[in-house]
Image (cartoon, rainbow, N blue to C red; front, side, top):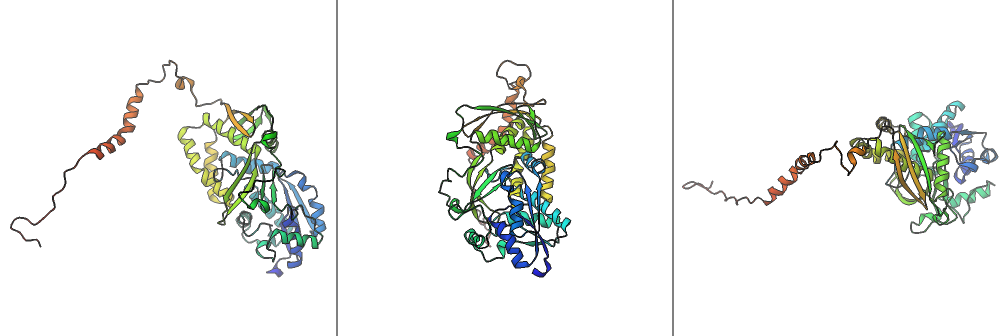
Length: 418
């Protein structure tokens, strides 16, 4: 197979794994390596990428600014669905992979490359997410997954290889955990975090301040929504990427969005991950607040019933699968009336909804009031309750009914048993 691969497009982050992979691909396949990095809001991490990739052996480097596309076409549709995996994880890493892989395939077509490659390990979810997208968009593309091929068994051995070949890497044996950052979140895993009892190092977190250092006074913020999408913060309309960046700033300032969890990977094992998603935490809370006054009760319950499935689809990597597209169509139809404003109170790691309003609100104070009103006839509730209690009454009466014991059947008088 190595002879069939002459040019590879590598999803390149500049981290330990992909830095080693460039050199390994050249040595193993004797091929040309084109490095591709997607700018999804990882900030200063991208600054040295081009120089580093070329110095390591890449023939060409693509760095594409995909921040607005990422938030508008991936993060916002997921937020409209209210997706949360296993009750805690807001899917920050999961939602980035299909966009990176899609852009990678587009570059492979442009460059007439034979294959694409990624730095995901053979134990993780990312290998599935990348490769499902590759195969969905380019069914005949060749795929190289070095972690499933090479002789290295750990990131410590990669560090030794990198040092031997003069490849600078951003981790050390003393601080071996890996990070993944984009505009929606930052994740930490591996190394000292593999002990689920060990508290993460205080200096590790990046986006959200420790709650002990958060302001001692609460801050209020409003979030405007149109058809399920956030469009403004504190009355100021912003582009999707700018809005998420501002939400991150607000949430991070107050220590909001830190999560430490053990999750179930698609490949079958449990994994400990630490995440920071300050802006996403605020947008989830604000979104549900606006939904509470704009969605019909049964419609909201229908949407809530598909949240676990939608989140699972994203986590597993089936973004471009027909089931995700079908669910998205349902979600987007449900979100059409979700236009309004939520007011949040931010304080010491907590997000509290303290107000919500909408131009077409379903909340009717004339119906909900405890004061005198002429809209709702309270006597109507009696029949409603009796009808709904009917099955309960029948079941209870059946329990109390004493049925006479049945006589054992025997032969008729003068007859024969057989």
